[in-house]
Image: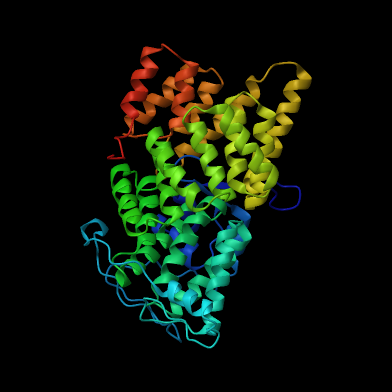
Length: 465
């Protein structure tokens, strides 16, 4: 990446530094990234992805603003836009776990199917769902197309889906299916796109709250909030409660089972995770995104050969699926295959459109080649990977040192590993990361100090069965 011609781009790490560059506070920088297109990039790693900005992109953005607005002061009211947008009704504060038991399942799709089987044309029928804010036929067609875009799980299609669904949610704030689809699309964007976690999580959370305000029994809102509770808020037991509620509301929803399986696998609850993976696979057999997650779950459970075979098959058949290359990059690193790690990292970066990761994977390949030519082993390459892992984690708003700890273990660097574990404990971190923890223990079997540190970092059990 370059700034001016021939000049390396200056990178500004983390929201605090970006805000300082703008002369504003952190919350303002985050808000401008959401509302004003502030150019901020996301890095992978840990529960949350760190962010960075390039100075020349910030300068260009600033020059495109007539004047940077002042930070709002408490009690201040901003001037309304010349054409105020239609806004959804206020969302009350709701504790999703204090709500009543589920209502009967929605029947309208079944009714449409029955009408079609009876030969009754539904082309001219206004789309009717459980929401009071109904979509007419052309609008419903846009909604279905946006759902298809989200289901493809590519960065470009997800960008299109969130744009369309955001517009529909604005125009139809009382339609629960639109709000649910928007919440789900933002969660998928966090995994398959390059938007920052702050943007994806805040918008997913808001859309889920809007859906729950319309339908207190929304299973989609529950499972979206379950994802956020586990991967963002660090509340595994609450996440489990939300997922079990979602499954009780919609036992035929494969994503409710799959996303529950993912957190159980991450927390090392292998039998419960297998139960939920099986349920999801029964409901959506052969879905590549599901099989990629299942392969990662197998690897987390220590079933390395089975996981590798499945992930390789999925990657061969679906080469543009970002999540499978994400998993394969880690499984390669775990086996000491540095070239494989860089290879799959590069594919993931290209698929998701992550310029920083593209540059890093290319630099990593050059380092590997240089080490090979010099005949100096792999110490330099491991040092580069570990340095980056630690740097990313230290700049996270919600640091999780399980990834740099795993890298240190793979590199055989006990001193670095102990320092990372001690730092994580001092910060009060609690980890799932069962696949990483399992490999750390294997690399240092019988090491009482490392084992004790890992036990102190463990999360509570999630599943109640």
